[in-house]
Length: 252
Ligand code: PEP
Figure 1: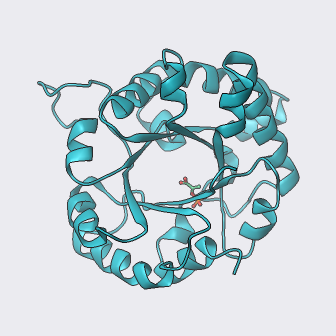
Figure 2: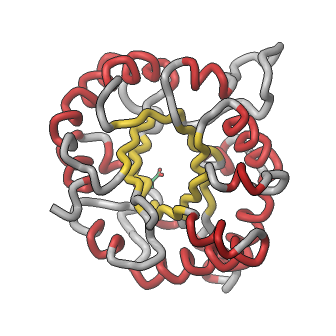
């Protein structure tokens, strides 16, 4: 049985104070959500404050990015995975399409970041997803396969047990245009097949694959009914505690 994961990506929104306030507002609203893991990903400057306030609760904290270097060093502006762990986080998002698009993060960089995250004791949420152009050209499956293989290259079998994949079609992120449950299910099943071919049937069976792209309180339950969708990575609708709680409590 794969435990679902509902993760909120707050992107570059909210000061440290606003992040703590939203986290504290969320806490009672999801306190009974034992059916899934709940994760929020605030900006770097808010991680420690949010993690401290959520200690002992059922909400875990993720960073939105980490350095690809494992050790400390002269890398101006970077934050190492072990520093994120030290701030009280358990997860980190790597390879988000905004990082791939604006910061030119290629698959090998995403793979290095995932490895650094795992070495630091974090769970890596590895994002993949095709653009609209790639989908329209019939290249969605090939693109996502290449990203899954490239972003997870160099990971050992035990590493793979500690990663989560998030399928986020770029055309559905922040656009209000969500993939249909059928489109998402097709890609999730495909990702699991790729995983089974490259690694093992057992690794594929236990891999959690989240869907991301305009997930809202009114479309989450349709998505969660699909057999290969193991949760959601939520952007815009996670910024409000009330709306994110409705998504977390999709079964209630
Ligand atoms: C995201 O940024 O990961 C995302 C899925 O955003 P949104 O839910 O706003 O589409």
